[in-house]
Length: 185
Image (cartoon, rainbow, N blue to C red; front, top):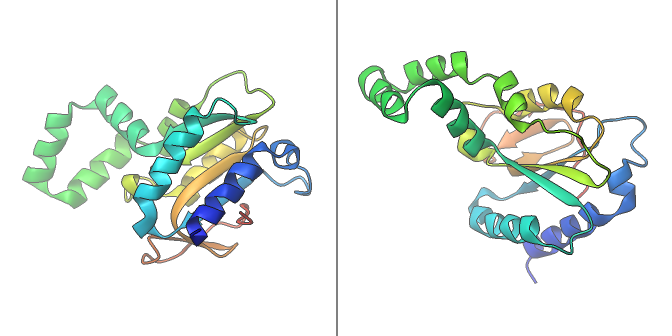
């Protein structure tokens, strides 16, 4: 059995544990967990997520929020995809990034993720982290998500590393500080 498979099995176990679902032992911290994996293993992780989300016997209710799908939805509301492609062709990637930051804000992402009521056993699963870079940075999103989802656990599927202080996307980019999550998966 591979190391990744063992970690994914531990994640499945954790998602079903009462201690995790209740946020026990966190000293009033927000229940955010970062599941780090080698970006080369993306397809394996995506396959696992598809199985997990459709598992009828899972002891929790997963609400997957794929950040890439959310970004596409926000863009679709604001600007036709053809216009976005044309803008990048005409003005370049930097201009596109700046324009998208003006209409695909962190608050727009949080708005798209919100649902109610939150129920005991719900778990917010954030995926598509690498797909939305550089349009959205997970450390900034987690700061904005905390007030809206403080009553349920959040699991971030992160293609990179987290050393309990810094997130390093793809194990290549400059680390960004985020200290409120746990990586004990």
